[in-house]
Image (cartoon, rainbow, N blue to C red):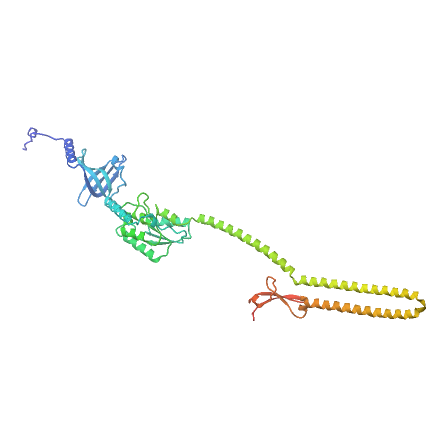
Length: 449
């Protein structure tokens, strides 16, 4: 028979609540604050705003609570499997007798060290002048080919290509593939940038990726990559999609864009703006052409008027008019001569009548004078006729028609200009050949000098 324990022999009996309360006080007094690093599991964001999860390593785990008043200052939302660094105090959840950590600060594991390294590198490069604005290269005014250094399967390259297709579909884009996250990302980005510089086939480079945590983006804080970007002969736009924080690549690049899409807009001209400029230039060109055509038409009319004044037809008309004038003068001179001789004859006849006794003598003398008059008139008429014929022959000799009647011809080119030299011709020209009785079209087959 087992002997029952006598409560009187036990100086103090604890209740469960008292035990848990005293353990809680003991732990909280012993461990006021401590830092822990571990992996998150079983994460729950309660509707009250509090966070509950377990923090574990390879051999053990502990329950963690982070109340709303503390987690509202967190810079990220924790996720299962994430390595974090926390600042906490030890406590006990008395209803279940479970000890737990109450967290007042949390950040991704390594972020503190990474940020310290980031600030040190930024200060170092700034001291060397690599972040100075005056050493930045301007983006080219005219871009024909764009290079993009990023992951060929990431969202960043799709955003860039979408913007370029909308704004400037004629631009050529060359992708230089590279890892943008992980241990090898910095070296891969350097290799892609070296390849782009060596080929020298683009007008501007975009280097970047989509957003992420400080750890995800840390390849863009690599010192060697930063120096390579700073001394790159090509203009570079940094497009790391993290609008709040800057990477070292953002500081050393020539231009920083908040997102890959913004980078594509920076380096590409707006097609609608270009079309508007093109329309304005087209209108100016049309006005210039109309003005030039107007001046040329006025010059043509002036030259045509001068040509009409110098046309052989005008000279022939002038000579014909001169000939008509000489003919009229000749006729008037002959008529005047006849009238003068007739007047003299009448005077002689009257004198004969007054001297009747000498009628026979005067009659004979009158007959002689009449014969002389007839001969003189005939001779004068022959002389005038001969002069007229001589003038007519001279006019006929200078007439182009007479030249054509002698077997010659005149050749005119396509713009009706008289051809005076073979220097005006080339093989294949079409000529109009004018003869005395018509004209013919002919083609130049060969030119002989």
